[in-house]
Image (cartoon, rainbow, N blue to C red; front, side):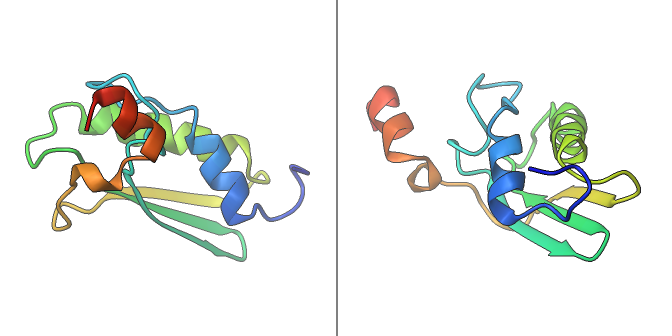
Length: 104
């Protein structure tokens, strides 16, 4: 990805693959926590789903995801990462590989 061009959805999701859920220690992409990615001119918004309604490490998750997205965006791009507390996370959101590793 060229750091001077607008990132694509794939660029953002690839960057988020390196972000680990602080409680589970697995990629937030493989866990299915990435609910939405919106890319506008000079703005990227990412919506994550916490694994629980009482996610005690939510601030760490938000900071790590924001840092990862910023790394693939041109300087000056507004990056917004937020949690959707209303959409419940369910195991079916996980990647097939991770479900298999977890025995689900």
